[in-house]
Image 1: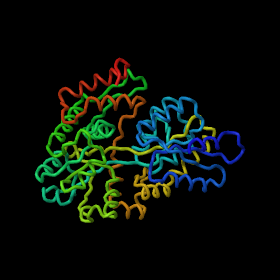
Image 2: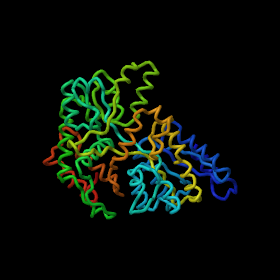
Image 3: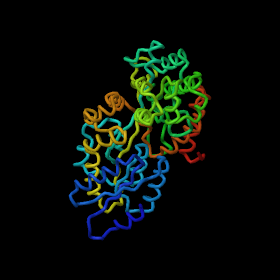
Image 4: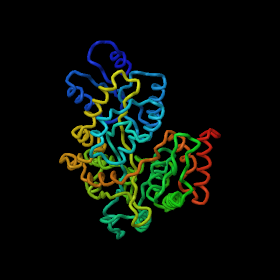
Length: 416
């Protein structure tokens, strides 16, 4: 499919320009938006989609390989925010027109703008955003006497789960999900994985050995060893923790909003009772220390325009259509991916489909991105090596060992 598309859109055909949009896999929403924007373009261009692999790392690998080979077929890219700095630093992204920058960042959540920016320049266009909430069973929280109308701490969640002997769903797998969890802990404790950033890898200073880094490590260890995370924590990802939460042992879980649509789908299929979904509650991500606002995980997709595209002006015109309020609302309802445009959360269809929409918006407003660095793969890979399994980390030694290892990798003294 991709090959035929690229053959058809080769330059100099003299017909309507075709923009190729490399997308991450979804439920078909981006293809529908491409059709909508093709129609809205009124014959100036048409958009065709090409689907990338499911894993973000594989998406990055394929795009980097093509761009490094001067592939001119890449007009638009759905980019995981963690890779935007690397692409910008490498010169893979066409400059965002100044007159466009103001329009595509208006009413957008701060983290989406932050992750689209590199060296004080907007280098990508925010599309959709995602964040994790604290999901809880209302019956379990009530029985434990936990007041969920107020922010709760991780310690309170652990105590309530132990009191009721119920599961706490966290992602302990040696994968990106682990970095997501640790980043939320250290940011919520007032620190950052990278304390001082730099485009020179030898000048990057990590923040793991700070008080916040040690506190995050301590909490990760204590949650993992609470006795409530289940026997498969070392391989637990977002899907498996959702499965645990759906069971009779479910109590609490940090996860993305797909878990709600997933539960509704099971009710429709007849594999889950409606009463179970009715028992679902949601709240902001737990605090590390009482009274200190949490910094929930942030994810999503930003749109990049290929630096070698033959139609960068048209491609940027297309980004404005793709990320319109109307299309972000459609994508939220159809694919379940939350909008970066805050006005979408007032859309009646969005509110009906996602009764926790206001909590998602509030979470996105205070969410903290993972490290924005051109060397993200080295940082997250090193972190996953030293912080797994999560139950064996030690605040007295793991931050130092991880710092030494990642620093050596950045200096090309050691391989991941």
